[in-house]
Image (cartoon, rainbow, N blue to C red; front, side, top):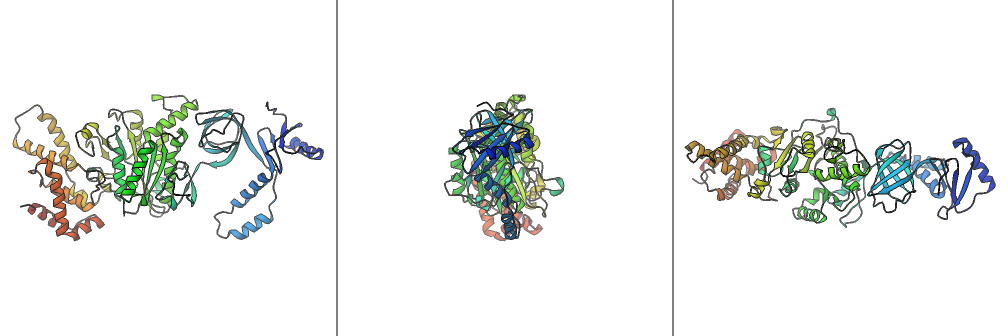
Length: 571
């Protein structure tokens, strides 16, 4: 039906009387300068009527009056003494003739709806479609709006009415989410029943300001020897995990989550565009190691629509902010932001935005910066911390590509996993030269910092000398010993998955390695020799081990005891 903007339309099961029409015409003349009304019979509109006038919808049905009453009551939610306020609100409630701004769906498809009207709508606002679907405004144009659909969108049709809600997109949050698997909208998908949220947090939020933050100083240990010794991560840091497909990026994140057991850290794993079977296997692994007791999985699989993949990391961050505001420490893993960027590119192209480099829109940097900047170590009076481990996939090890360089510039360091190292058996396959932590020793305990001095330098020299020795067969004794030492260190940094190393074992292993305890041991026996050394020290000096684990440091006498034990061990 063609809509005449100079005419109002009444929808009702019952035709209005002459006196009602006269009163409505007077109202329309004053409010909208409209002098014509057309009645349209609609059996679904009972207990009153609905009327459209221009871009306004007037709902004078019983359900419409109930909505007004609900809005009046919701103003008092969260107040301490709510009952007297509610009594006053109920006693004084009288429904008003309120007009809601409406729009019309022009086109819909591929999770995108183009809406005409809604001149006062704002970017990021939630819209409600006639069929019950929800959408998020992502594009504001001169005479129309681009909107992404959260639901399947099958019930959104061309010509449908669209209402503003005045609300921004939110994520339900609460303690009951711990141990659960939810979708990008907060709905449980693990079959364990309904979740009662404590609050709703906006998915888009300004990052904490500088005044609210404090320096990163408390370690968030991964349990991975190579990372905790050379590229330490602190609570509140953003450390990128980057590498080609199938090089162990997710494995590092899972090991880090498992290592947080008993450390009062809430972990959130956000799966973006992953296979459902992969996420299911990951959840089973976390359950096997009792890590789901403090973990939330936000799952937006590859089969989900692009809008849900786009919103997933922001929803996970909203959950993290809820716990941070309560003074908790949170670890959040975004796996992975490459697929997130692809989802956003898909939405942008469907919204007819001009493509740029690699067809990504011009604001692709802002997409990830506004997400990762929300990770912070808040001052003690403000709350806890959010530590982010974003994951980015490279193609053929090219870290200079568009998305990798963007995220590298946003984060506080990167752990680069190399395919050649992975296939040679070096697991985790960390490239020491290309990896860095910009927080460094500030996020390391004193014991580990002292034990790991010279480790990264020794490995760098080993790789440098290894290149030159390929062209020479005659090596001096010093070079041979240096190569043997570096080779042993490289072997020592191999670690089985799901086998986190405790703080005291890390200290013992590094102290022994840097004192060249393992230099004469055959390469394939180094790992066992290191484990046996740690076991023996634990048996002989449990008090020192406990002190390192709890306080992160040793006294001068304890350090001397450790070095003496290492020098005499096996002799």
